[in-house]
Image (cartoon, rainbow, N blue to C red; front, side, top):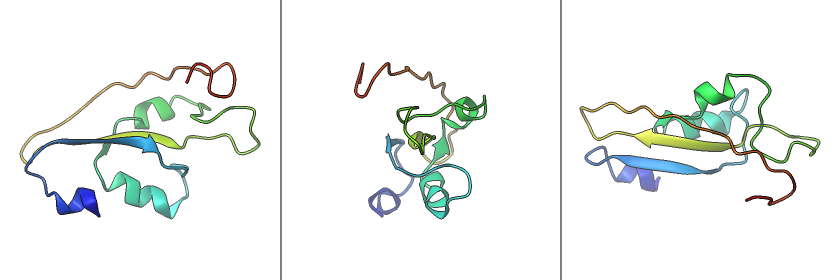
Amino acid sequence: RWVHEHGVAEPMVIAGDFNTPAEGDDLYAEVAALGSDLTAAERARGSRVTNFPLQAEAGWIDYVLARPAAGNTVRGDVRLVENVGVDDPY
């Protein structure tokens, strides 16, 4: 709601752990409505995950979205940094 209330006059980057998969989840539609999903291309590369891969429900739950100011476009590149353990390195 806060993002939508600020309109499109200024650019915005929205990023975080939204705890929702991109495919087959109604909540992801709400997340994607916030801006361009800059993680989509990286996610499409295959069976990559953004939560600890040894968890039973490992999947893509973290997103970086960008919403340009009205009349502009946005693009970006995302690079995953692999954890070697829980919270290591992040």
